[in-house]
Image (tube, rainbow, N blue to C red; front, side, top):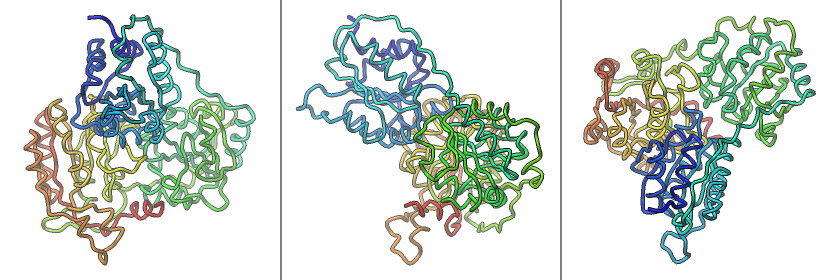
Length: 537
């Protein structure tokens, strides 16, 4: 069989080092996907393209490599839209292989390049047999080097063209962006003048943990993260945990009383800064980012520094001089959520989400990777399920879509098979995406799915209140544990803390299939982070 463009694209990507591909195979991507597999790239067949897109996104986040998604032309691409948009908004390095109908009269025909651009992705195309390798390498480099989501359109007639295999040299990574000397001096001066500095690390600082820890130690700064960088400072005694809507009361107070807030790879947006309320009226604000357009995009800053987080932190550290106590002298004991007392609202047949989360934290092994879906419940696992580092928390929330959690957990599990994967989701998000529970069962993933089940779209229930007609967002109770059994997973219904013994038993059994916990949770009257979220709508 002659070598075609489809074969060459698959082989080229394998040579470039793509670690895993996710997708749903149809006629348009059949040969291309098999070319990847033949070249040694593992492939996971999902049950829906939307799930496949988010699996690839999560895999990229947790593995540090470019994610790869393979879909059918037309509806295969549109089915994946929400996952692609989430990845694009999150600056996930993801390459989408999108076959493209060759004629305008095809049922599959659509403006795929325009569609990709509308999602915030970069549209690329394989143009011909002779250009196939160069086109593929260009798209891959854009994803890797610019941390962009790229849709590589592959016209069906071009895929079928004969092509010669060409040797591919692995393009070098560009060096980290070094900050300008005057910017380093200005940031160093801000740290020297501050008495209560706080460093907030975001997605762009996930690889800069050691440098930021050392900088904070020398400058006397407290440390915090955005939600997506949760775990970066695990074990650090002067870590405040997550800043923003998920912040503990003690953390929120200390951040709000800071006289300098420095965001490293962090947008300092309304979520991380509680619509600006975590920044004191007299506080100075600095922001470090490799993208100059990101500086001051969400709020005014006193200083913007274009630079890589680790490189910039190291440069300021070298210029700072002798260390000092700084804010750490006044914050010797930082209370987290586990230190906060609460009134347990549990009833005879429903468990308080805080009790559920705290008890689960005690049962689960430390080496875990937590994926959190969106909804009223989401702050509880984010606050109470501790993670060992930034690669223990996968948070696909840039688009604020429910239903991405299950796929997130599967992609993260395949990226980090050394850790127990834990999904925290609501009943709405879980039922929306339940088809891919079969994927987890088929792959033999020991995935713990914890469903915070309030038989409703809880965010809307609490936002619009009891006086509204809530019949469109409330549902009869679903036996999710029984539903899980139908997919071949284990199921467990939890109504009180004692029922969590079933989770411990499952862990002790060296599991090779998922356990779905149907946790019947009591109403919390509306979560504090939900109130924050709806202020931005």
